[in-house]
Structure formats: C-alpha cells, structure tokens
Image (tube, rainbow over all chains, first blue to last red; front, top):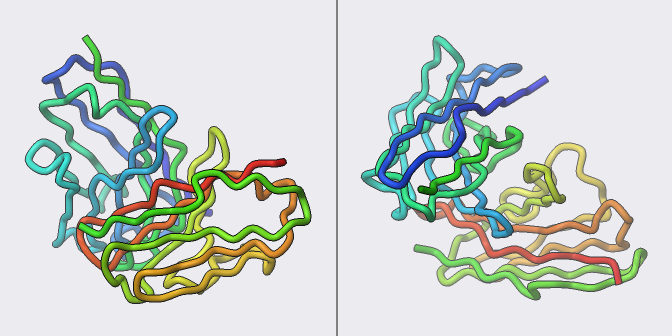
Length: 120
Length: 107
C-alpha cells in the first residue's frame, strides 16, 4: 500500500525557514516523480515544486523560485521541501504527491498534508 | 504560464442529475490534462489523466474528454459521494498549473 506522510509544518515568522519532509512507502521511491502542492485556507490547489524520479530535474512555481528548494533522499525514501524567506502568503496546507511515473506529472497518491502558518 | 479556467465556479444539482464541468486553457496542452476530486478535509484524488484515461478505481459514471484548450468532466448521474470540488491540472508546460476548481453541491 502506497503511503505518504508529511511532517515539519508549524508556525514560523515572516522571513524564517522551515523544512518539510514526506516519508514514502509502498513503492520504489526512486522510480517516480514527486511534487509539493499547497492549498491556502479556503482556496484552491497551487502547484509548488516537482522533482523527477532520478532527482536530476527540479521545477518550481514562480512564486517560490529562489526561496524554496526541493530534494529527495532515496536512501531514506524521503522527499524534502526547504522553505526560506517565508511570507504570509506561503501559509497553506502542503501536500506531497507521487507522480504516475518517473516523469509523468500527474499525481495518483497524496499525503494528508502538513499546515504551514507564517505569521508574526 | 498556462492558465486554466474552470466553469462554472459552483454547480447546484440534485442527486441523479448529470454534471458537466468545463476546463479551458489559455494555450494548447494537447491531451496533457488531469482531473482531481477533493472532499472537505481530504487530499485530492486523481480521476483522469491524459484528458480521458480513467484512474484506478474511478467509477464508470465519470468520463473525461477534450484536447487542445477545451476539456470536460462529466458525471452521468450524481451519487451522494460525488458532491465535492473538482480541479483540472495541466502538465504540458512548466510551471504545472491547476484550475480554480468547480464545486458541485447538492441542490
């Protein structure tokens, strides 16, 4: 059974940093693209960042480029999102999701999400 | 950036009725489009990919169609569990983008 478990969310001040983690199980982690998608309270889905199965290629939304970094550790079956220079508008539930293939950026399994709140 | 516009924003229907949801792109995405369903407090669920390929476990009353810039998600006869928010997503161009969502609510 595929499982994705996010952690690392919480309350952070504007300008601060957080690291989100997503621990994966039930599939060959290194074979699939992974992504982060966020959802501000009461709002729609916003794609944040993605990484290919091999980790060679990373992609970012313009709203987070230069501030967020995605990475994966295949030895730990874990996806990360390093978030810096946080802003109030980064407040959201952050979901990690699994791609259908190594480069197929449709997302067939999702975690339960972790809430990030940016506020002073 | 490809912008996806979903319409209507809200669809009020009775159980058993047919639902037709639209997703329009500002540029061609070929058939590189997915549909997701999201219920309150839950993560999204993949319904279709490549515009019309049904994901695992999705009932046959759901269908997806379209190509280029115009796409449709149809629910032939609404069941109580189908009342939710539906999103489209394109993977043709970076950055990936989602539509703003259509809420299907019980009338």
